[in-house]
Image (cartoon, rainbow, N blue to C red):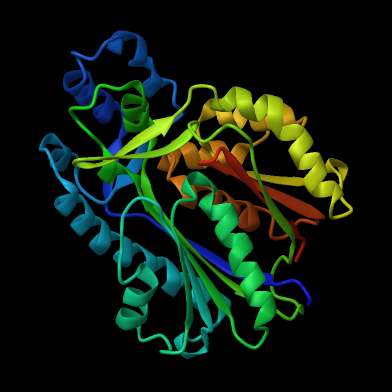
Length: 351
C-alpha cells in the first residue's frame, strides 16, 4: 500500500480567552493555603504562556463542579469545536461531506457514549456508512498517535478520505480545592482546543506523505503521567521528571525508530514537537541537537494557546506547514509524549 497523504489540517478554539496574568491572580487566592504555594507560584510566569482558551469563562471556575456539570459542558463544547475544525479542514481539502469514509476521534478529557464521531455524523449529515474509531486515554500523545492511526486507516481505503478529529478540554478538569502540586501546575499550563485533518490513501499529490509512524512505551513509567478518577472529575498526574526523562531517554528511541525506516536524524530538516511546557521544548532541542530557541512554532503555540494536550502538536503542524509552504524540505519529524510514559512519532515527507 502506498502511504497516505495529509491533504489539509485546521484548528479551532473555544470562545473564552483566559489571560495568564488574571489566572495567576485568581490562583494566588484559590491556592493561598496550599503547602509551598509561594514556591510554586512562579510556574505561571515561567510557563511561557500569555493566555489560553477555555470552554467556559473564568468565573465558572469560582464554583465547585461535579462529574455531571463537567461532562455536560465537555459534550457540548467538544462537539462544537470538532464540527468547526472538521468543516474548515474539509473545505481546505476540497472534500464534500458525502465523500468521508472514516473518522478517527481522539480525546481524553471527557466521556462520550455515543462517541463524539457518532454525534458529529448526526449533526453534520456525514454518511451513515462512515467507519468510526474513537480513541481515549492517549493524553498528550494523542495528536501524534491519532495521526498515525488515521494514516494507517486511509492507506487501506484509498477511494475514501479519512477525517482525524482531536479535541481536548483540559480546563474543565480544573480543581479549585485541590492543593496538590500537579493540580497547581496544570492550572498554569492547560488550555482547550481542537484540530482536524483530512488524509487520503493511494499516494498521488496534495500534501505531505505520512512516511513512517511509531511509538514507544517506557518500562516502569505508568505513574509518570495520566488521570486519577476522583469524586468530582479527573485529577491530573504528571511527574516533575518528564523533561529529564525526555532528555535522557528519547534519543536512542528516536534513533531506533528512524533507523527502522532507513532514516537518521540527518534526514530530518523540520521538527514538530508537542509544546508540553518550556522545559519539554528545551529537552527536545537538546535531544535533536538543535540550537536553543529553534522550535519557534512550538513556543508560539504554547504562548498563545497553552498546553492543549493531544491537540497541541497539530496546532504546531498547521503553522509549520503554512510557514514552509513555499520552501523545499525533505522530512518533518512530529513527536509527542503521553501517559504510559509513552512517545508517538510521525515522519512526514515533503509535499
